[in-house]
Every structure is written in C-alpha cells, then in structure tokens.
Length: 286
Length: 202
Image 1 (cartoon, each protein chain N blue to C red):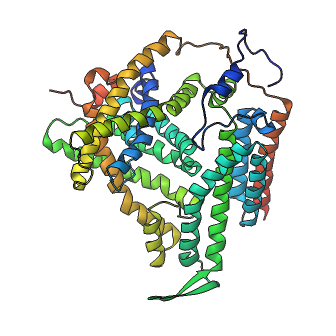
Image 2: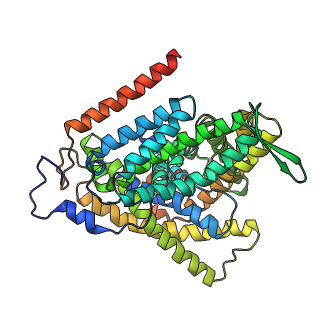
Image 3: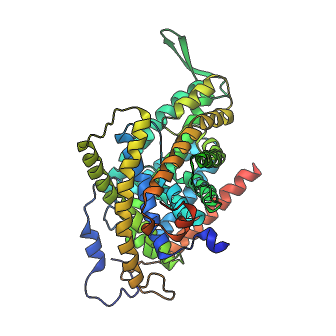
C-alpha cells in the first residue's frame, strides 16, 4: 500500500493484519481506507491539523472559520463514507449542544450587545432580544471549534493508532510516551467493562445509588478502590513483561510497520508552518 | 532532588500512567452511575501525584486530555494544561508531606491541598475558557456563566465567577476521594514515592 522502504523481514502482511484486526463501532475509531488522506504520514496530518486550528483561531470574523469548516469537511469526506459519518456524528453530538448554548447565551447576554437582530414575544418576561454582536461572536467561536473538531477527528479517524506511534517514534518521540498513549487507549474499554462489573457486584450487595450525597461519595471510593487495585495487580505483570522486552533499553529500534514519509508529506508540513506564519503576520499588520 | 521530583520514571511509574488515565476517563462514567453532580475527572491525576510524584502525574494528566479529545470531544484538548497544573501542585504538596495523615487533626492538610489544587485549576482554565471558548463550552457550567452574564458581568468576570463557584467543590471532593483510594492501595503495590508520601498502615 505504501511506497518505498524496508518493511521488515516477515512474509506476513502486517498492514493487512492491522486493517482487519478490529471492527469499528465508536465514531472515534480508525476507519480503514486507502484514500490520499489515509496514506499521508500521521505526523503530517497532525502538523496540518494544528496549523489549521491555529489559523482558525487567528482569523478575526466568523466567515473565515466557516469557510475552513466547509472546506475541511469536504476534504475529510473524500476519505470515504465511513470517515464522513464518524466526523459528522461527533460534530452533531458535541457541536449541537455547543451551538445551542453559544447562540442562546451569547445572543442574549454578550456584554458588547447593541444591535437587536430579532426580538421575540415571550410570555412572563414580555420580550426576548437576540443581538447581532452576540450572534456573530457565537458563530465565530462555534466555527473555530468546528475547525478544531474536524481537523483533529479527520486526522484521528484516518490514522491507525499503531502507525501514529511508529511515526512519532521515527520523529524522535520517546518509545515510553508512545507506549503510554497506546496503552491508555487500549485500557479504557477494558476498565469500562471492569467498572461495570464492579458496579453490578456492589449493587447486588445493596449499593444505594439514590442515597444522600455523602453516602454516594463514599460508595464512589468503594467502586474505585477495587477497580484501581485490580488494575494495579495486572500492571505489575505488565511492567515485568515490558522490562523483559527491553522497554528501558536505549539504542536504535526496528519496526514491523513501515510508515512512508514522502516529499509530498514534507511539502505539506512546510506549507502548514508557512501558512500559520503568513496569517499571523497579516493579523499583526492589520 | 530531581530524582524525588520525578519520583523516578521507573517502568512501574510508566505503567501506572495509563491506569491513571483510565481512572480519569472511567471515573466520569461512575459519577454518572452514582448521579454525583461533579466532574471528578482528575482523580487519576491526583492518584499519580500521590503515588508517583509531580512529573509522572503531569505526563498522565496531559495524556488524559489527549485521550479524552480522541474518545470524547476534541474540545477537551486545551484543558490538558489544567491537568498538568493540578498534577504539579498536588505532586509537589505530596512531596512535602501534605498527604501524611497520622491523626485526626492532619485531615486539615487535605483541605489545604484542595484549596491549592482548585486555585491552580482556576488560574489555568480561566484564560483558556475566556480566550478560546468565549466562556461557553456546551456543558452544564454554561448555566452559571449565563447567570453571571445576565447580571451584567463581563465575560472574564462571569467565567471567573462560575469557576470560583464550581471548582473548589469538584476539586475538593476529588482530593479527598483520591487520598482514600491511594490509602486503599496495598503498600506492596505503591511505588517508592507513594510509600514516602502516605503514612504507613498500622
């Protein structure tokens, strides 16, 4: 799939194994594919996302971030229907409530409000006025945050976590940080299952989820302690296993996975940095 | 000194970090089950601060919000800085023996930790909330901000006000819960930093 480089000495197609390993059910999980976005180096995607987010926050009116939001979503949608659906789901689930409270609160109460945009007749308090300044501010913040969401999600959903860690290690990130990131991502579903089991067990023993707050806070400790201790016991084993595989050893490492880093990737990274500098200088001069 | 600060980035400490991240993330699910009206999303970070020191805890705290931005909402990412500040403050206090509780009176120390941690949290979250979000994040505290805004406060003061109302309660409860969970960890499984930071079991 990717071009160039030595992919190790095994006959097994590691990429295919990873691609087919797990089914995706959460909107944040990796969506397999072979679009140009999938093939970019993961670090390139992170740099480009970071640059786009910075630019969105540097632009002064909501039109810029709005254009970026639309353009980015179109770009992400080219990576496949699954990717578009994932990003869209999160946009609606997170952006929906955000948009609602932004428009309501800023539209009504933004401190610089002057020009009335719409005035609604409401019972009890007579009139409810939405102001232009507040709505514009709400849209500015909203579209900045949607750029942040689409850029990061687009990068996450089109990148397999293992490829990301390999790419980061090749760029000089410590293998420990990379391990910790992967392990945390893998731990969370495990711990969720375990937490649910503990919750069920304690409820069978008469845990009262409707008691007063003090008791419920106490029950919280009773739920967390077994979760933590159970996980700690398995961490000791994990520490031994890692140690026996040379986790703390220094020196060159070889990777089973080959992550390509083409001239195109480098060009995008440089362009991202230049674009941020350009927008920053433009904002300084104006 | 640096060794004490780091609490030693031993393999055991590195393995504890994902556990703490898991606790931060899963803790939220348990608060929902118990219907506790708080976030309690720094308990894992505080546990790391007590058991493994400020620097390990800071790595865990930052990673928590990196992971949260991957599994919950990308808007959580900027608050990684808040987690780091809380980790450094709590870890430093743990190093200075503020979690060494031998008699009843010593529980006052936990109140001190709670105040310091809340202050750190407010100081770091405040500029992020004002500059990046304009005060509104699409979560429950928006209501408090709205009340302040409606009473004629500026965005800066409204955010500060809502933070001062919410943070001490949330972070206070988190500190106390983290202490008791840390105490419930058998001594055998505490890293050496944690053995010094907590009183011995009798």
